[in-house]
Amino acid sequence: MQQRHGITVPFEGVPLHAHREWFEEAEALGYTDVWSAEAGGADAFTPLALAAAWAPKLRLGTAIVPAYTRGAATLAQTVASMAQAAPGRFALGIGTSSNVIVENWNGIPFENPYQRVRDTIRFLRSALAGEKVTQDYETFSVKGFRLGIRVDEVPPILVAALRPGMLKLAGTEGDGAIINWLSADDVKTVVPHVGEGKEVAARIFVMPSEDTDTVRFVGKRAIAAYLNVPVYAQFHEWLGRGDILAPMWDAWKAGDRDAATAAIPDSLVDELIVHGSAADCRDHLDRYAANGVTTPAPAILAGPDDARQAMRDLAPAAAKA
Image 1 (cartoon, one colour):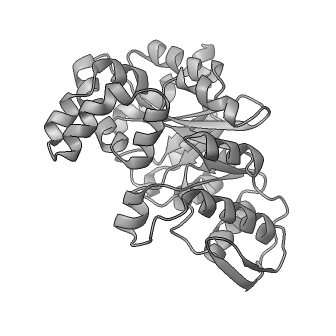
Image 2 (spheres, helix red, strand yellow):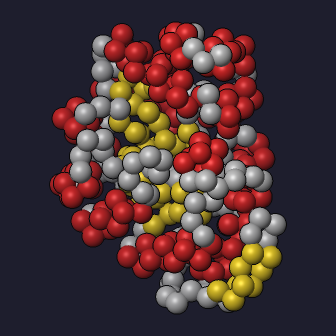
């Protein structure tokens, strides 16, 4: 696979209408991709629609869209619209998301996640090919749907994957995997399950600071917020961190958030959060690529001024300078 250079958007603290010059500069700096996230902030598609118009060379990807939170037809229409807006430049990243987002925030039962993602991929393949879809899938049914717009090039579908079952699905029914919240060394454990010749995009959290105390303060809170979510807890248990994270999990279940955060070892922050000088951060990101990530998409943990400088410091153009 071609080595790509992505970055996560939108940038924290920058309103969407002010992103034009950020997208234009990212393109000029040698970034090949921008990847959006969808949790509690902007939706995944609006920032990419803006980038499609403002930066016509960038590839646009979602990392990720939950398979549950849009109806099948609505999702197909949105994907097709993006594919028309940016022909050959859009990649759909889809996944289960989590029980917090799907069930707690959207009131949708978080059931049969593997099957839901598999069924969504199969439906989208048919719908985007222009077929009339009448099908009872295992997790939903579609009766008589046909897209009203034509997609000349069906976009690649990447699957957000953590453990072997979903990683294998990403490589068999998907066009690759999107991975998240793992160390550079963990990549070597994860990638073989996807298979050869597949794209592996990674959302990697970067805090461009040499203030180690601040990095660990912020990093531990981010780790606690994510790694107590069941899907991520199971992922890290599979990666072999059960003993390391057990004190955090126990304190969290007991309702003691401060103790849970304090129980996270500094070494785990150093593994999961890229930090340090610009050169340190580039070297750390290079380890992800060397271990099998084809499309790193750093998510910068910083305010607008520091994030803008970090975008420049981490760019392909900076590495060549």
